[in-house]
Structures are given as C-alpha cells and as structure tokens.
Length: 292
Image (tube, one colour):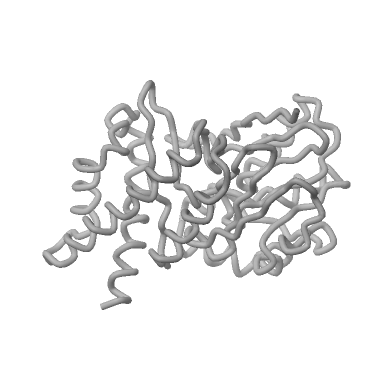
C-alpha cells in the first residue's frame, strides 16, 4: 500500500503559510504531485531529504502555473532519474519558460516576483501526458482553471489540482473557494468537474493544501458553488453600478456558506483570500462580458 503525505512548502510571506504544498507518494514508485514555486525549491528538496527520499521516479504536474511547477528545474536536478509528466501543450513553456514568466508578471505582479522565476527544463526530462508509461495512473484532462490542467487518479486517491477549487480547514470549519482566474469559460470548468465526478468515490487531494475523504460529495458541493457564484455575479452585473468586483466579493462572503470559515482567518490570510476571490470574480465577469 502506498503512503501518501502532504509536504508543506513554507513561503515566508504573510498569509501564505500554510498555503502551498506538495503531495508525496511512496510505494512501488516514489512520486510528488506539484513542486511549488522556484523561490522555495530548496525547502521542498530539504523536506524530501529529511524524509529520506533518495530517489524520485516521477513528478506529476497538475498545471504549469509558477506556484505549482516553478521549482521543477531544481527538483529534477536533485533527482536525476526522475521524469516529470505534464500536459503535452505545456511542454514548450516548461522547456522555454520566458513567455510563462512574462505572463505571470503581468497577472500576478509582485506576487510573481515572490514566487520566483522558473528555470528551463530539458525536454528529455519531460513526458507528455499522452505518453504516460505508468500503469495504474489515470490522467484526466481538466481544463478550466488553466487550459493545460491535469488531474490524476492513483491508488484510490484523486489529485485534483485546482479543477476542484481550493480547500482549507480553518479550526473546525472547512473552506472551499473556486479558482477561476481570467480567461475563464464556465462550461469548460463545469465539464472538468463532471469528468472527475465520473471517477470512483475516493479521497480527494487538493493542489494547494488539504484533502477530504469523499470526492463525490466534495465535487457535487463544488459544482453547486460554482453555479451559485455564476448566478450571483451575473445578477450583480445586470444591476450595474460601480465597484462590481468588490460588491460581488462582499455578497459572496455573506451568502456562500462554503466561505463561512473566512471569519476565522487571521488578517493576513483574509487579505490573501480577498485577493484570490477578486481574481476569481474577474474570471466570471470576463466570461459574461464575452457572451454579451
């Protein structure tokens, strides 16, 4: 039986600890799911070494955003036998990350600088998801959060990336939030949730931090939440007026029970979540504007 554990990758940034993690799978194969930003690569490597991980077979990349795959170059350098599996359409951006980096700076600004610039990875170290050689690993294309997003099913665990949102436990209350940054397509996002729902009911492991025992219940809950956000944001857009994004965030915090744990968060964590919520709302706004 494989052992699965979550490694916290501390960022040293107010409100961002804990926030980013890497899933370690140890058994017939030793693998990690996502590796975090470039700026904290050595922290992840040190933690793997502390757990006596001397050999790594695969890195499973859910998507190549710099907070999930930025550390890929240093991790593969430390483990020369390892290969990384990622979406076939993302390979060129991993080998030559300049365009990815410029886009990250444009969207994330100072946060991108904090995460750090990804290093190029040799093409020979990468495996396109369509050529995956690993028996027992099911790869599901789940675009929506990103066009190159993948989810992985392995040994009765679903590594859903951000296709199932972000999930955290705050005290005794959980917190579920969509990750729907621009450019966002609602139908594509919902289709990805439906794909994951067709898999067996199993533990669901989220890309940032946290897990839940029943994937079906969590995916049903998440789909309902995304549709609720869509209805509320479209209604607010039709009302018109100023401060649309701020107004939507305020309404969502009031009306979405999945966000109830927000009130338990420390001020710096609230600031982080308000930023990500605003970006998620902008994704919906852009979607409805394109349709009009």
